[in-house]
Image 1 (tube, rainbow, N blue to C red):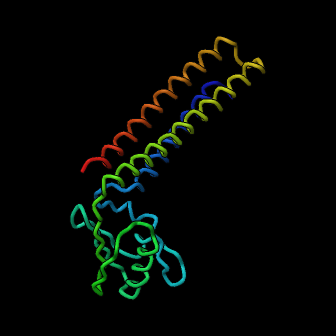
Image 2: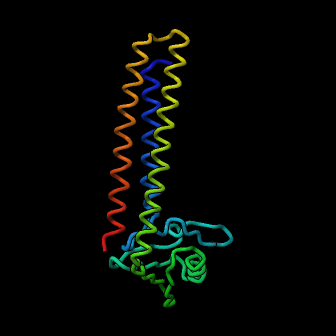
Image 3: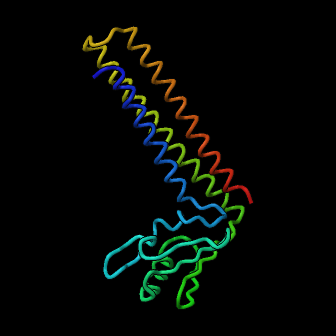
Length: 186
């Protein structure tokens, strides 16, 4: 394996970590209605747990509510039960054709808890980026030990890997900061 491959693999791992962070942060609630908040809800659809988005149309008529229109009216109760069982903290209002969900306002205390949760998720992402760096540096050292690359090339590769790591840590911090700002904004 060449140094270029080691760098490429490390960067790919860091990209995956950043994408994973973004996906994880989508699940953290802000004060606004976002369809991604309902991604984790599974509805018992004829005995099969199915994602809510596959059994109903989900829309956000305004910033504080959802409108869920099932493809089949018969599963309204199942959707309602799935929402109640999820830990969203929203009470579904069933009018016989659609379900309405109102996103409750976040209290200051809850906002701070969510901000802490974002920091924790971001720290896990930073650790994953650093682990990718460590793995890449170990590969470089192994190449040096096997005399596949010179010591100077190894040092340069480690410096390049560190630079990429620093860039990804900055990106992680930036993404987390944006989410935190969205949560703390009233």
